[in-house]
Image (tube, rainbow, N blue to C red):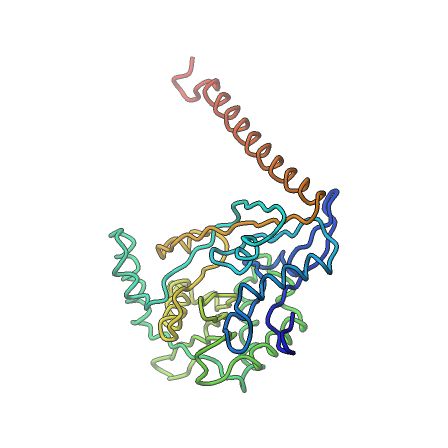
Amino acid sequence: MRYQGVLVAAAALVLTRQRLWRVLRPAGVEQSDFCDVLVDDSGDGVPDARTILGRLAAAIRDELRFDLLDFPDVRPGSVLARVRDDWPSGATEIPGEVCLSLPGVPMEEHVEAIEATKIRQRLRRRLRELDRVGLEVRLVPAAESEDAVARFLELHRQQWADRSVNSEHLTERFRGHLTAVLRESTEPGETTGFQTVLAEFSLKNKETLEVEHVASDLLIVGRSMVAGYLYGYLPSLRSRVDVSVALTRAAMAMAAERGVPELSLLRGTEPNKYQLSPNQVQNVRIVLADGAWGAVGLWAIRGWRLTSKAVKRLNAAVVGVRQVRRPASGPNRR
């Protein structure tokens, strides 16, 4: 949507058919950790955000034929939550995926604030190991994007050599896409606004003084968060340092330097994330209805959710009964 020729709001949507309903969902939703719409809230020569959002919502309802607008994994404080608040038809909200995050402070500061003694002591050891091996970090300038992306994806391929890698990450199309994005958004000295940044990690051989490129981390940097998108590292690096701590330490340092309040670890609750004592952020799924048939769709979604919960409780109860009735095993059984 434009105001006096200036783009002030955007929503990239795809119309799908789900059972009996026409459903609008965000483009690329299957690959996205967060879903939202975009709005210019700068106030610089444009209407206030609420006015813009009202016009965007009206345009979606007036120009598109749909029954449900379905946004999974919406973050707290999102733009879409404000659209929901003023949506004239029905709406429902369902818990989504859990995301983990860390504060935008140096890791050393975060570690000292951890209450659990064992976690704090373990992370202190990891940080001392990193200091001892002398892992160096640099941000790739725009002029080196093509070569840096090639190095990065080669490390990513080696990292996943014995496992199932996302085949798209090894294509020329993906390589060209990353190169173009980095070349356009990475500029030396730029510290505000949205950026895609590639950090390279290297180790110097103390005897030969040769520098070896051992890891790369692709980061998305905005005003409210830094988020790790994709990384790659030499498999042999894992025997020398804690790779997860090394990458996270550098990302937290960047967030602190740029005044960004949060480092998001994105969706997923993998054990290596919890070793850093992160905060939990609950995403939600927001579904908005349009028209009477859309309202019926909301009732159906609520009904399916209640039924799913009841089935899970029943299954848990049945499993519990079976475990109680199962005869004891072992040498003492008669």
